[in-house]
Length: 126
Image: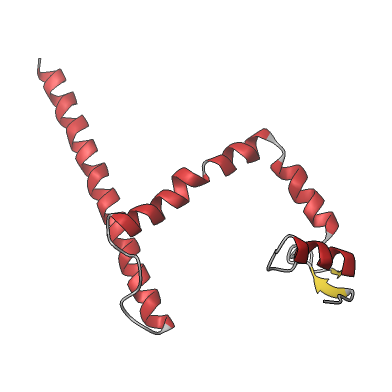
């Protein structure tokens, strides 16, 4: 397959940049499916920002914050596929699943608060 230089627009700064034929060949060899989204300057800025300790720490929290939610929705709540068809119906079903997930978290949090309050009251009475 023959590649030609291609003009793309950066999602961060909006500037146009050239995606060279050589870069396209590299992407094809690595079997990357998506075109680059950022120009070289924005990519370098992002890499510099992600190299800081605080950014690394926040990024490392991702598995506990986001991926746990999806795991619970799939395994505990059984949301492996949507039952309804059509974008609006799927959005509604997704919102119901998220609401159920958040209600479970809220009930657990209230139970912890009650237990803590009961413990404090018992401690104050003795």
